[in-house]
Length: 238
Length: 173
Image (cartoon, rainbow over all chains, first blue to last red; front, side, top):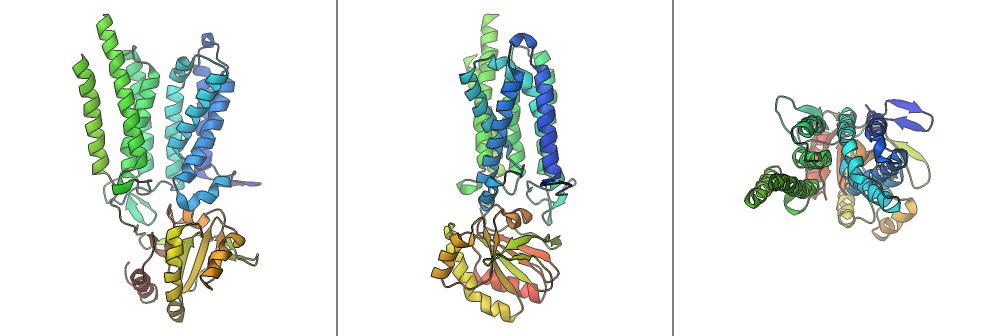
């Protein structure tokens, strides 16, 4: 499935096409969800975020795979890691906010659904391209990949992203006091914790514990504390 | 309310840790790729500037390495020592350098008196093709171009000998 299309110097793989689609949708939808009253230079911030996500994703992808360090300099390649992209985007967002302060919370709340949808599309691209290898498994929905039947870890990631997006839609109506950005962060953390557990090619610590799961659990605890703090404050004020 | 605050986070923490332990990777250096995985046609450079392409016809042992990688530096003399006996059985042993130039790699090869053929893969195409994220990695390809085993981590003489038997006689890894 790679590459699908050759356009001059570019060889577009199914994953690359999905990443471009995901970024395009994220930018287009995100810009429209930011309230005009927030007075945010949405294109400027989204551009900084996209650059940060791309750089972070590339660096994260290559650092997590020792054998492909040489690919860091391959600027035509689009493969990147979602955790790296998120960290890169967060860095770019904080830098931009420091340079030109804006309503950060409003901006993040508006980007919740586009970000989750972009993650789902990117994960589907991983599946189409046969990247991100799942652990061997012989179950009902195992897929043939890298010479064995394996967990379709990319589909798990896409599915969890869609479920979290649906939960965000529900939660913003049922629990309006909890900002959407916390559901977004919690959903991403939960996705890392669950789907990474099915990956065979994860970066691991001593004892086989996966690095991304550790990051996901820490982020989930932070979000849990924050959500419970909001619930407690709301309870004490009523 | 304070108790609920702590309990929820504690439950999240315990569930998360439990899941991480349940799904942890068994720390073995081997990931077996079963038969039926054809190696795609890839193009590599050689030290004299020409290019070579992966081809069928003879079994091949492709050793992914880099001169800056300590386990690779330990492994290559082991592979080189067995290469002559493998060659008599019709198996080509090729070192596929990942991301370096001939100038970078030649110092190590000269110091170790390694005379095996070396292909240069500046973009890590072979690592990507066999879904390997580790160095060293050894790829065992049979005469029909099918990958029989991808061995992540330093390979031992026993593994090389066993795989040579499989590549020449047949059988399962």
